Image (cartoon, rainbow, N blue to C red; front, side):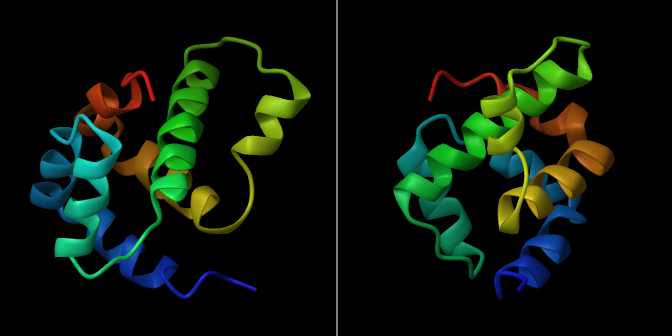
Amino acid sequence: MEDPRSEKLKELLKDETFVQGLAKQIQPEDAQAYFAAHGLDFTKDEILQMGRALNLKVRQERGEELTEDELAEVSGGFIETFLFLGIGAVLSAILGWANVPW
C-alpha cells in the first residue's frame, strides 16, 4: 500500500523551487519544518531515514557497491518514491542535501 504522502511528495519534487529550498535544509529539524510548511508531515526519524537513504542512493549512483542491508534501506514506501523522483529529476539540486552527515 502506497504511503498517502507519496502523491504530495511527487508533486513537490517536480517543483524546482521546492527542491532547491530542500537542498538548503542542513539539519533534520530544518528539513522536517520545510516539509511541514509545504503540507507534508514527517517524523524526525523519517527525515533521518530519507537523508540516509538519499546518501546511499548517491553512493550507488557513483558506482559504490552497497551492502544488502544498505540496499534494503533504499527500497519501499515513501522512501522509494522520494529516491526515485528525487534522484532522477533533481539530483543536482539535492546533491548537497545528500551529503549531510545525518
